[in-house]
Length: 83
Image (cartoon, rainbow, N blue to C red; front, side, top):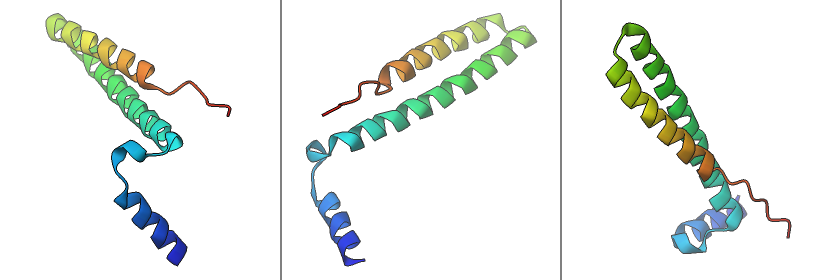
């Protein structure tokens, strides 16, 4: 238990620039998953607006969906470091 506490203290005392690379990749992966979930929700809302006849608001929301989906896909860490 003391070893775990020491690791937590060491993590808390470091600044953000010294974070390990796997942690950075995990954070970017979580961010991209959240962006994908948000973009799917936006797509569902825009489809509902299209069905209700609100073409203008649906179109704007669909463009926002495309923007968030592209951001989520480009933020996903695909490169694996084999070393």
